[in-house]
Image 1 (cartoon, rainbow, N blue to C red):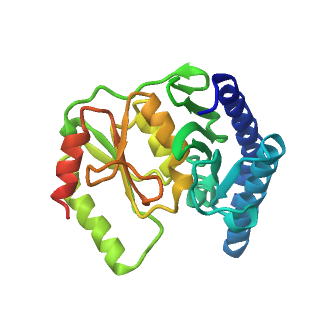
Image 2 (image 1 turned 135 degrees about the horizontal axis):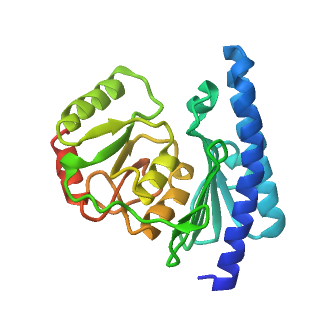
Image 3 (image 1 turned 90 degrees about the vertical axis):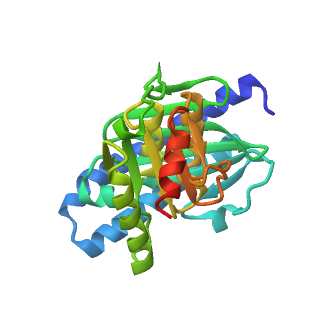
Length: 270
């Protein structure tokens, strides 16, 4: 495990990188309105790519020995496999559909694993100017102020964020709508905000009580957010109730009081 000084330094570097990428996202976000669809897809790809290059170049200069896993360019930056080495795991633009539509739930997500354990999380929404940070064992913060999960203990009074994932085939869509149908009567209301990383931060600061997503893109969607939830007193786990695995592309998160009820409710949707 790295010492505290290094860890604080890593966090500061990740925040710098996220803010630089955030400037690029902000610029693109306000331009998207004027672009036809084909152009929008290009703009998303260009913004994604520009942000990831910027983040990785920034961190690579500072920490040349570290490994990098990113949504856009894993191959170019060397690794797709998670090892015990310090590894930066980056989603340069989470919420790309929101980005295209000018819906302000868009963020940069940066996580650092050490010994495969998520140790640092930075999630920055440059449109709403919200910077979520967390260091394992040191708490979670929104714009520098400590945050904690909600104290809601009844699933029926809970706000649930539930994402559909990227696939649109009939089986995936039917599975999603069946689950929503089953869960609607068990929670107060459901939201589909469109960013896994920001949903995790929503759990961490108590705006959301429970979050579930099956079939997300990869570890870059969850690594940063998982640190922030855990440090805010929440729990991150597999929707089955098993231990969370950052490579499994399934995630659930809640405050500690709601985990069992959520797992039960999800089991009834199978």
